[in-house]
Image (cartoon, rainbow, N blue to C red; front, top):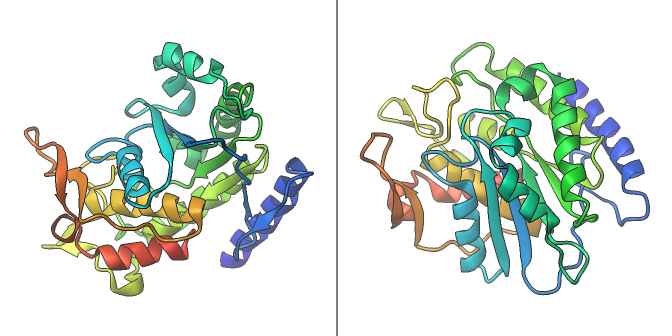
Length: 289
């Protein structure tokens, strides 16, 4: 199956290279094209569009903004999120704000420099045509005033526990579908979160996902498996490494979840205490950039 995935990566490279004709093409070690961000005057704008894999117990956009601040990266983060729905419904429920954002202009010619598109798991896993059409729909709206925006397609996670026999099969399908959807989008690349989370489950770089016999990456009590502190930390660090091709300067504290109960919330906490093994997760993120 790894050979098949690599073949899809090669296909993705060829098609995306055609869509990026005239740009300087960067290809990573897996043969996947990396999008070229526009030259920004001043700070870079990053837009997250997604559901509860983007913002739930923990906020990936908030963590990413904090990593950028600590690393002296001039970045401004925005988000459009709605719980438990595909991308077209995220747009529908945020239409006024979305249309306002998409109509904004910038003097450098691109209002947004990066956009991360996180599709709902059932669509990303089982409905490739809907996956493609949702991505195309949103990107076309964004590209009106951000024609050179770098688009990252979020590679999702299997909707089953790591111990489930279908985990690897679903992972391969989601990766394949993300690549096949990506190649139809101009200047697009893959945010390899599904690969990174799989590496974490497999214990790469000495990481152990179990804490008191419970999954410390994702919340298994929910069918959507939203990420917990470790998973969100991995997600934000991966995006930073993917965009800037280096590890962030890690602050001592980040805004993380106090737990999964009704009375829990997000607040600033010490990374060394709220994240089980930040060094291992940082290394996994960097390896999947």
